[in-house]
Amino acid sequence: MNIFHICSILPSLFVFVTGGKLPEPEVKIEVIHKPFMCYRKSKYGDMLLVHYDGFLESNGTRFHSSRNEGDKNPVWFTLGIKEVLKGWDKGLKDMCTGERRKLTVPPSLAYGKEGKGKIPPSSTLVFDIELMDIQNGPRSHESFRDMDLNDDWKLSRQEVTEYLKKEFEKHGYSPNDTHHEVMVDDIFKNEDEDKDGFISAREFTYQHDEL
Image 1 (tube, one colour):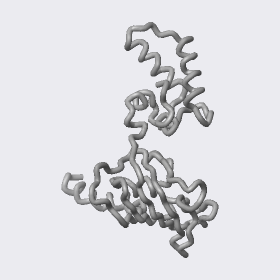
Image 2 (cartoon, rainbow, N blue to C red; image 1 turned 180 degrees about the vertical axis):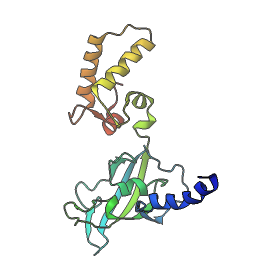
Image 3 (tube, rainbow, N blue to C red; image 1 turned 120 degrees about the horizontal axis):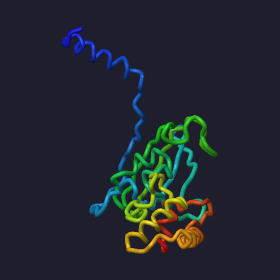
């Protein structure tokens, strides 16, 4: 088979192989308000403080409001680590403090075919979101990046232990496993707020005094 013939069949082969793959649905983003001055835009890894209202697109029913329900306080979360709906992770990038956006989120980027609580299966959701504040997330802390060896946004006892050993060696001390274990016990006692055996990104950001 000559080169010309191979090149002539490649486009049709590419269409055949890729034709069945559907593109991932997108979030529809509408800017309701944008401040005149924007000193910083949100990016993956930042911690965002937001107020929001959530509605069902099908009938306009509001299923939750941070301003009117619970403690009525805005909500903190870290952008881009699947801590919130995938639609939020995709729709709240490059946002300024004080900005408001309307996000229309398809089911596959929300609660899918199962639904959740007041949200029926396969629901498209609409969110009115105001960004109140942006803070450096755990990825802005060099020690967290160094410790999180498997890049899962939480620290295990083994990861913290390995980090302490390296720090001791870097400063000219002999590694002392017993001493490290005592230190790790103390760190997890103070930092692992929910006692699940890991120091989460949020626990590290708010609590880290030991590391």
